[in-house]
Length: 121
Image (cartoon, rainbow, N blue to C red):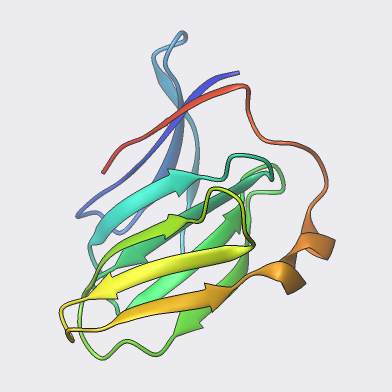
């Protein structure tokens, strides 16, 4: 699918179809600016990092949150899925980098990831 994901100062994660040139749906839950978003390479997941000090994982097929990771004490500036392991790495203005184990989330997955996707902030 010709999808990409965005996040911004409206606190919303949006999934877009670039061929149709429109937003397909919006994921709500963050309480502050979203700094980064990324599709997972295999699962139907999106990771987002926000100034609300949380990292969230969303199932974009069911359009629902599957995990809210807390522990940073300042803005979360970035988060990324590990390319091979069930991990998310995040960095914050609290001067920490955290590694999150996502292996327990696979049971919440229904189908595979999009064939084409790009991350955008």
